[in-house]
Length: 123
Image 1: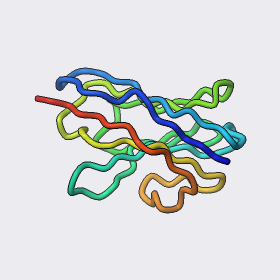
Image 2 (image 1 turned 90 degrees about the vertical axis):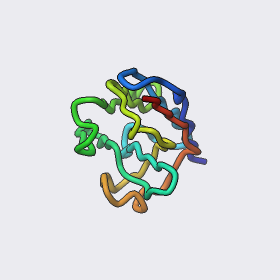
Image 3 (image 1 turned 120 degrees about the vertical axis):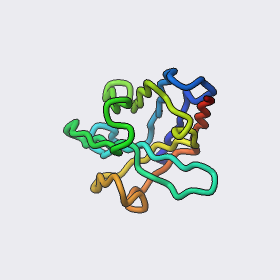
């Protein structure tokens, strides 16, 4: 069955960097759209970045220029490089996968989700 396992979260000071990873298994990774989403306490989930099977990316406006989504099809792994982190980036980060849809906003369209990894940025 499909499994998505996130790692790489942690606590950093503002201005620091983290790289999140999402190890995928149970499906043909290269053919799926992949996305990173986040949810802070008391807030709705929001899309952070997505990447299509062809490598086309899109980003949440507030992370553009600071975050980079990428994937390694040979390793079945999705990444999110996060630089210049801000306290408002603090959230649980989830990766998601879908064979058809690649929306940044409509996270509910994704079929598969990981358990999440916590990112905490202190000022």
